[in-house]
Length: 72
Image (cartoon, rainbow, N blue to C red; front, top):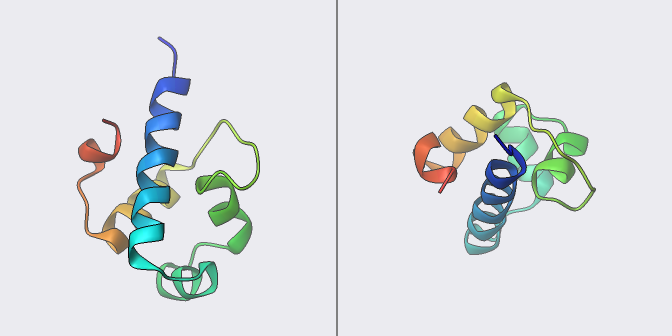
């Protein structure tokens, strides 16, 4: 199975939510406890092929979205 399909969907969906909410990485970090470097990876500012499950679920909770919806 090609996991890049899932990573691309996650990045695309989180970027969309990030832009819609208009919130800074610093604010997200303060509210979720996720370090800025991990946020750069999640929002695909830095090239990456992985996202930790902890980070993924914290961001789903922060943006109030279903984890399954983020994989579509």
